[in-house]
Picture 1 (cartoon, rainbow, N blue to C red):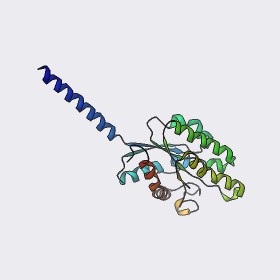
Picture 2: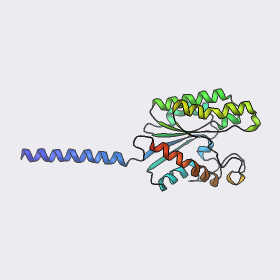
Picture 3: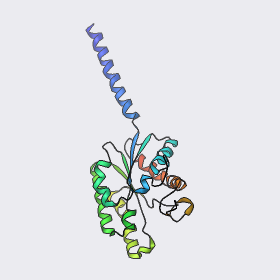
Picture 4: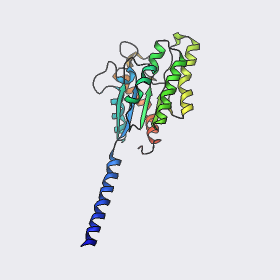
Length: 214
């Protein structure tokens, strides 16, 4: 009887371990979209924002993911840095970092913007969270010196931290009235779908590069 009980106990432990492993595998891949109004979904209805549409697009490609929306309208890189730790919870596997547009619109020194993004990337690296850096471009009316300094921030930091880079978050949307809200700054639902379609391959590569990503 003792022998049988030992076998039964061992079987129960084995099944419990298998169940735990199965549960771990069943956990969706956790992404946080961290940014400003472009990430938050300014002016859009339910399920029309970038994070919702990206989650749907990834799901359609067979990825079991959740994409949390940690966008705050009006946020600068200074504001993002101040809230980074509590906006990106433990267990996050990938952050899509999209900040800088409001710095540019306010004429913030590119040196300040770069330092803030550098600190954010350093903090996420310490937490062992992968990053996809979404770049922004300066408006031409700010002058060539500002434009060159600002535009260089994103590829420079992507190289420094060896993170994935999507060069321009508004690629295919900026300057296209049919893709923008009436303010001429934010994407409309069609614009969001355009962004998602264009960034999707980069997101998939970033997921695949994370241990356990699918």
